[in-house]
Image 1 (cartoon, rainbow, N blue to C red):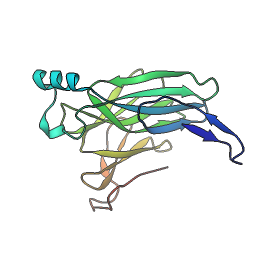
Image 2 (cartoon, rainbow, N blue to C red):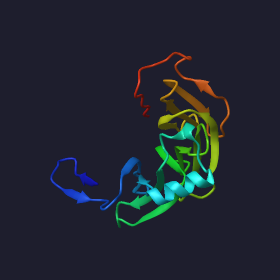
Image 3 (cartoon, rainbow, N blue to C red):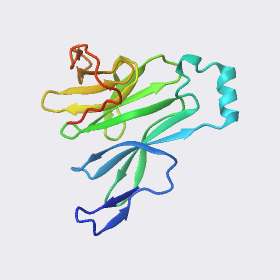
Length: 185
């Protein structure tokens, strides 16, 4: 992963030799980059999971994939894993700067639906905000109203809840919107 100055004069390698870097977000106040790295398990692990029954065919899109989320400091380039699961994939991540919280969507192999989760920036005090998600495409934070918004790529909707997981509503009034949706603030 390479960063460039606004003038395009300076390039700097931030991360190297990463497996499959995916969703990421920036905390400019603390100069941290939060990056999700996705891995594919080998056939031996896959066979063991089949035998032990830790996943089902309904979740086959993510079978064989798992994610970690790293916090990488842009000044000293130190990275530390703040979330890791050998049976889930993180699809989107966003940072609430003033609250010092991460909000992210993940899908576990053994669950039919995805989860919207939150934690402190170091990965501590993790909790589920919303359980009834089909497929989260992106997540965005409104710090002024203390709400989180996400796209559901199965339902083609934009939805929202408070940071406590309450007061759920469809932003677009239950109307379908175009595919490959993304929300940003």
